[in-house]
Image (cartoon, rainbow, N blue to C red; front, side):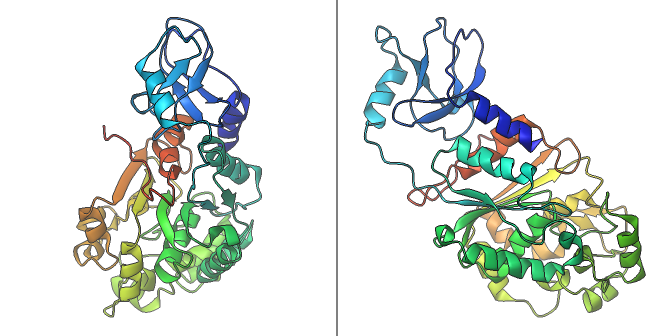
Length: 365
């Protein structure tokens, strides 16, 4: 899937929009290094030039223009007035990806998805870190994985002023906990792609059965990463007394860690992406900070129905009221979003600079 994203960008990096009768997707870079990704329909076939970097990958947000000087369109006026030939490169906020179970930062899929960001926004520093790769993502304690992620970003001088954190699956929980506990360098925007933010109530789909059996024998104490964020909704007391990590990270105990809340409130944007047909994270509403109601494995408490939200234990209520939480979803399996979803709904969040410091927001449909 992510390899296809990379192929699209690489294949179209030097193309122009020709013979357009309907809107078509393309990436164009002009002589000033200005890049765009959509062209408006034109009735002629002249090569197109870009007016500016897109604020969002939507036709309503972007202008492309033709080389025909005899057509002085509004687009040409915008181009000439806002993009001088000596325009400096944008001071983009770097983007850091953290993989999920069974994956690694050096795998082609993770590398290509990171590359899709820097291809969309030339000059943007985008990396997938190598932390608890392969089977270590299962066998390394989830708390230690958070520590290792912190060590990795702190060792990279290009991240010293902060970054956008993107976590896939288990990686979504890791980057969120990093933001709560460490946040140095700071996370500006946090994007959780199918991350089990409220834990899992069953063995994640696709996990080797022998690992599932180990956890089922010792729900909260097994030496498997997801035992650290297991939550049996039928037994709240045992969860609170035996959960090694999740109950602490989610401020479920009577004594609340205010630093966790303060660090979460420092986020400029918290993006939660849920796969509506997910069979890996159970229940999949955990990806949106929801879970089974206590005492049930069928009744669901959504994002704003949990005690965590109403008590504002992590600052989620405040962030939501400030309009800094975005709830996105797609119809599909775990981490199996479409190219269109990635391009239209996720990539715009990375169009963030230290100067403006606010990621481009999508028009709500």
